[in-house]
Length: 125
Image (cartoon, rainbow, N blue to C red; front, side, top):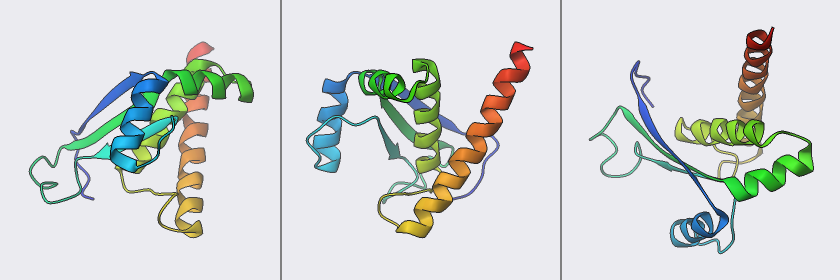
């Protein structure tokens, strides 16, 4: 994927019912999930809008449950899921590309998450 200085993406925060419907209709998985990304860079018309990455849809319900289980704030979990979704839009994949690609994505995710956490701490001080 080409890099552009100015890119756009859409972010939607929805409930479990809506993300379950999207998961079922587009991914053939009939259950809620935490985040789904829809790339606008793939397929027959991907070159029509080179500055639009795509859509990230996050379930607030699932994020809240996961945050509680992990001992995170809901805000932290939402930001992490947004990061995860954006990585998918930029070509990272942990589901279809095998273990090596999954490790690459996890490494990049942790690298950026650490940076975000340090920036957050710096603004609090």
